[in-house]
Image 1 (cartoon, rainbow, N blue to C red):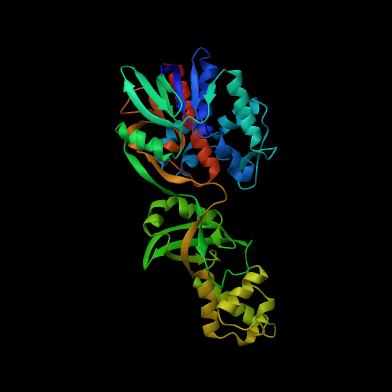
Image 2 (cartoon, rainbow, N blue to C red):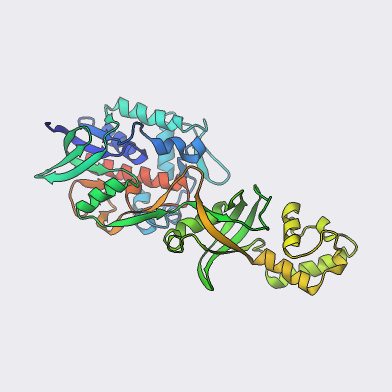
Length: 409
């Protein structure tokens, strides 16, 4: 079987692979570029991301602030973000007819609310610039022969001058990178929600409250976060929990996802200020039932659970609030101790922490420091973010840099 020759081969037909190919082909239309995808479909992750809407990036327009959303990769991405970041990606899409919208939480979607809009744009651009792409091409081996890369798949043999690895969290590709001398940081889940069974949460699914959350192993504080926490059928989710799961990906994996979570449901209060508030309620509404007057605009069904957890009858009047009652309510509201017994994937977005060791990459070009003309981008690197939109921005930024580098070579 004779080799098929290309100038550039990209392993991985996902977000970073296509973006690299399109940008490079536009700059250097004379290059023969090939994308190899191991599955039968391109851009699978784009299709399912954001619940099928595709959270293309996030409305953070300062490189330094943007980089703070990457538990792994913060320092390395700061420079690249100065050259291509969120605003640049928005402009790139809008120049190609993709209208975008920014939602309240900062996530950016196509106004169509359909990920197919992004896929159609990429495929159209790839066709326009004559990028070749093939499916069902799982890579079996990669070898440097003289000045060319030899790439063997389950279907064909190829050779290329430049090789770009854009294969996401593929164990097979990480194995081949290891064979080339690269260190691989083993992958662990990064974006997930917490399994918790506790009477306080039962029946409250759908409620979201501003919180401070802390992970404890015994008496040791492991990590903490803040933001909205969402009560679900299986436990807790929302921004505060997802931040914990991302920043603590390795620590929580080492704990086998079994630990104590402490939740402060009223982070604006101290023990003293909450005690004063409860005493005030007692003085102002002595004859009212405690169940009818929730404090600090807490949702009534949540307040009823707090009373239940504090062993207070719904019919108890504020006048009968004892010191012990007050202590129990404060404990539940400011320091709920919940037992986490496992994790769940966040929606359809399975993100991992792991990949090629960052010290082995030149972040001006995303070229391997071990092998000239080998580039590694996107989630094939040990980079991950706190939500899908930030993960996509890593894909766009790294792909753009590789395209620029090869085009100028």
